[in-house]
Image 1 (cartoon, rainbow, N blue to C red):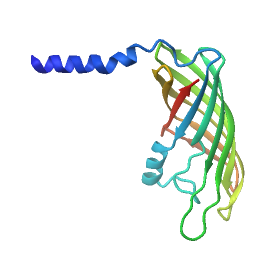
Image 2 (image 1 turned 90 degrees about the vertical axis):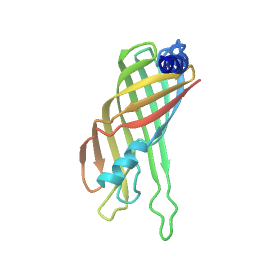
Image 3 (image 1 turned 30 degrees about the vertical axis):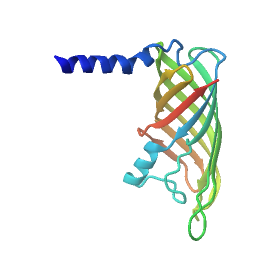
Image 4 (image 1 turned 90 degrees about the horizontal axis):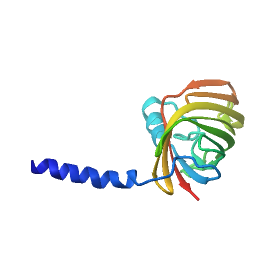
Length: 186
């Protein structure tokens, strides 16, 4: 019986901050800055061999997102990414990405939402000599986001359909590996 009391008390203490959040994930006129991580993509690249050939473990989605909520269901995104690896010998080319996107929350509760995110980016793609060539990426995919405090939310989404144009080939990828983003609200 004592264990149940400790377990119940621990659950109440852990869930109290989550239950006290009064704002939904998106609020009209709200601006947020997000950092998108390649945590899951790095794991997938290391275990599947699917990675950018000249700079391992780089995803076009990593970087920063500036998000402006137009309503409680829709937001526009500006995306920018930059990556440069310094290593022994010749450094690989610098990787960059610049894009815009939209987010639509089709199911939204007080603290969480199911979303659909889409957009396009300009970023380098490898050519025949594994140098960089101009490329464009179009992506769309589902995800989930939870507002864990007044000023912080966590988003996990997968660019399910990912079309890359440029370089030595056009690619169409079906991606189930999620990206992780952390948003801070202003």
